[in-house]
Length: 251
Ligand code: SF4
Image (cartoon, rainbow, N blue to C red):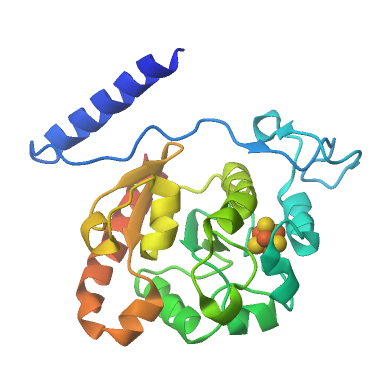
C-alpha cells in the first residue's frame, strides 16, 4: 500500500475516534514507522535460544529472527555512543515476553547504573506504587524500558546523536514484546514514541498509538515527587491506562 494512502487511512481512523470521543477534532501523532530495522545483526536466532550466526548487517525484525535476549546482550556490550565510557553498566531494561504493559522512561540514573535495572531508586519505588494502585506489578504484568540504555553524565538529557544511536534497541524491543498498552513517563519518552514536540502537560490526557499499540503519556515520577499537584493528572492517566488494558484484554 502506498504511504500516502496509509497516511489518509490513519487520519480517517483518528477522525472516527474523535467523533466517538465527542466530536472535537484533536491533534494526533503522525503515522508511525511500520517496520523496525534492527541493524546490528544478521542472525538466525530465535527466542528458544537456537543458533546465532553472523553480525553487523541490516536485519529486519519483522522476519522474526532476532530475539529479546540477543538485544539484551547487545545492549550490555554496546559502545555505539559516548555514554558507554561513563557507565558502570548498560541497563537493557525489564523485557519479558507476554507481559501486557510496557512502561518507557528516559534514561538510567545513578541507582539504575549501579544496579543494572530500570527505575530502582526513589522514582522507581514511586512508580511501583502507581502500578500497584491499578493492580499491576513490574515483572509480573509490566516491562520497563528506557529510551537510552546508559546513564548520561550528571543525569543530563540524552543528546540527539545518543538517542539516534540507541533508539533501534527500544524499537526492536517493542516490536518483539508486543505490549497491549504503553505508558510513557515524561516529555522525553513521549516525544520519542509519538513524534510530538508538545510539552507533557499539553500532550497527556489523550490516547496515542505507537505502531498500532495504544500509548498513554504521563508525567515522570521524579517530576511528581517534586510537585505533588501533578498527582491528580497522573491518577487520571493511570485510570485511562487500566481502562484501555481491560478493554484490550477483553476484546
Ligand atoms: S546509550 Fe545506547 S547506543 Fe549508547 S552505548 Fe549505551 S546502549 Fe549503546
